[in-house]
Each structure stands twice: as C-alpha cells, then as structure tokens.
Image (cartoon, rainbow, N blue to C red; front, side):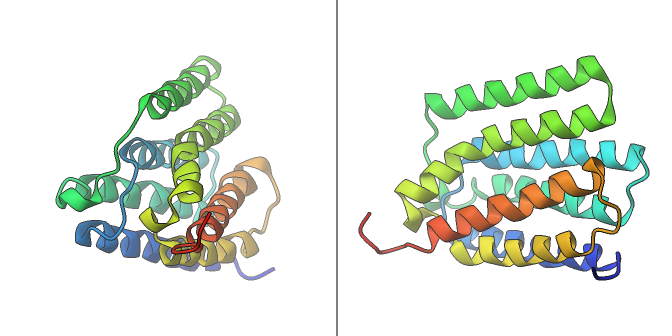
Length: 191
C-alpha cells in the first residue's frame, strides 16, 4: 500500500492518457464514439459528487478527472471531421439504459447506490467503445488507454480504506482502460 496522496498522482497520470487521446482526436487519429465519451464525462462527475458527500477525499479527484477529460474529448471531436465515429441505434439504446441507471439512483438517494448505478451506466455507455476497439482497433489509441491504466492503477494502489465508495469506481476505471488498451493495441493485425 502506498500513501493516499498517490491517488491524486494516479489521477493526474490517468488524465494524461485522456489528454493524449484528446490530442489524437483533434489530429483525427482517433474517432471517439460521442455517446460513450459524453456519458463517460457525466457519470464520473456524479460518482465524484456521491464520493464527496460520503467524505472520500483524495480518491474522489480520480473520479473528477475521469469525467472532465471525456467532456473535452467530445467537444474536440467536432473540430476535425476525421475524428467522428458514426453512432448507431445500439449506441442510443445503451445510452437509454445508462440513463435508466441514473434514474434508479435518483429514486434511492443512497450515495452507494449512486455509485453502483453509475458504474452500471458507465459500463453500458462504454460498451460501444469496447466493441469498437475490438472490431476496429485502428480507430482507438492504445497508448492513451495504457497511460490511463497506469494512472488508475497507481490510484488503486493508494487505497487506504477498502470500502465500496473508495474501491469500486477507481478499480472499474483501471479495468476498463486495461481492456480497451489491450483490444486497441492490435492495430494493423488481422482480426
């Protein structure tokens, strides 16, 4: 176990992966799924607020960073026409399912339920990008996801108190970034 302030360092490193992705989006090297990235911006900010309401300090900033950078990526995807990935009906269905998760949280008003429903919603929102990374690895930046995996891995190692509100989201971020990184690294290889 490393000191808790490493959670903030991990969040910073994780955000570098997002910034790298942002740069590649502006350059037209990646094509973010706007539905995924928009929701990847919204849900972590909800989790950030739920964590802060429960007194989570350092680790909550990893959630904030995980939400702020995707919103910048969505905005930047409108700058270069090469950075547009066409969304389809499946993306919108998953987005609807993700919002149902948020509505369920609103009914419970329990911060841990907010985190749980946001995790489910975030995963549903991320499925289009996971599928895209599998089917079209050339459309993703494995380097950006690898950097984020390292950053969120550092944050996981900085966990001092093993409770749902401290562990769930940061471990989820580590796992999803690792999966997409592995899928996207296959660029140029026949699938």
